[in-house]
Image (cartoon, rainbow, N blue to C red; front, top):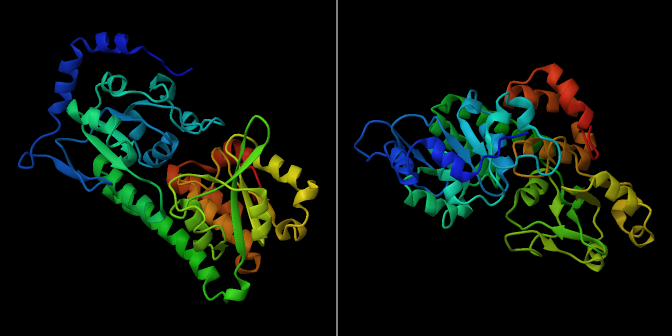
Length: 366
């Protein structure tokens, strides 16, 4: 079980007052003319460090996305002292690859600046949408904050470079960026030149459960899921129907009116394969083109669903493109793509893949 220490205990353990703890951190945030190095974060802020941070805390919503990106850098497990839940309610990936995971402080959901500051971090890594709340409070305590977005492919590459700068591992960041860019190019080359009449009209749905019935939602235009469909050569037929910033509920009538060629079903809590299986026998859905042609897919995943702006988004893109245009990916071995991902991104050997990853492949996984 992860360590859950109360804030008061941690503050006592510091051996000094809370204010002194925060001032101790202030020493790593020197002026622009001091020795050290500067990191440019997702908000374009210049954050100065005298030396690579030895005590890192990651917090906020969608924390597993930050953790999965950060753990692609060697040695980072020794620097992280606290984080929130990283399992998205399913299997714990970080706990499998970090031998010291049980010794880290597990922050409660919605942890405030006092909880984070009590860990005496040299750096806190947050998503940029927390800059005016948690981030601002931490900055007022002289705790360096580095913001990331990790929301689109372009932001993912940029934020990997930022993390590389922070950890003084820019060469590793460059390797990772090249890996993702090569994966994207592989898909683009395979679907290049598709005539408009061959492009598949795609609907990606997120299924959530209410007390009385299931709810279907579509992603915003700007999110990774929409971008992935376009990069895979599909036409996201919901585009412009949700210009907002979060999932938006859509009615069955609208789904039936769109009548997509292909449907990808996502569910983060329930099993997406169970949702697809149930709807395949639902009379109301039988008139939908995707069901009639057998192109209604549960989105693939393992520790996390591959549709998200998590490190596995490159797997989701590749898998989606192969499902849309199988004739263009006849030589692609998706199992080997996944195996190579864990080897390249996390340095995990074939034994880890065979024992920890392959048995939990889910959805319409390879």
